[in-house]
Image (cartoon, rainbow, N blue to C red):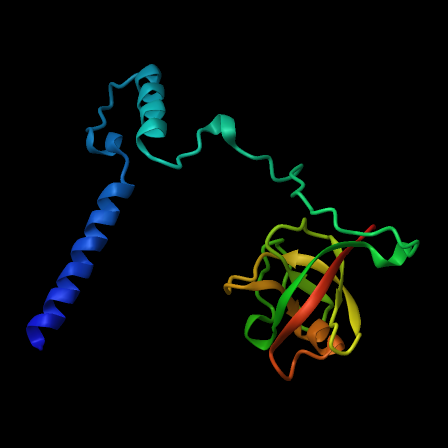
Length: 182
């Protein structure tokens, strides 16, 4: 039995070392000399872009200050301007006391008593109506953080927002999201 555990651990360690070796660009193995010119550096940098899969060259960088993520156009024109553009439904969870006072991805401090939320792609400052279809309650939140990082979750609400729509007790629930115009 001890031999089996050792082989599993040894195999896992070997796999980890192999993954780390693959992640290192080939150009890192070459020694760096103080007399290398800027042209040589640029050539090495270009070589790294080709050697490392998924490496984004500077010309492919995204300007996050002007980036607007795509939003699916699912809203039906029912004449209700307050409804907003429906952007989907899924599972919402909430976060509270453990993160209260910590910085969010937008730079502001998280306040579990404010009506805020975390979304993976919506721009910071976006207003979203979150509706719990089980009880019909809804709340408008402002996106100020990134997440959720749990698989299968659509949005993380502050504790106050989760309380407004009745998902604090169960911890999570199915919701519908609508992006509101500012």
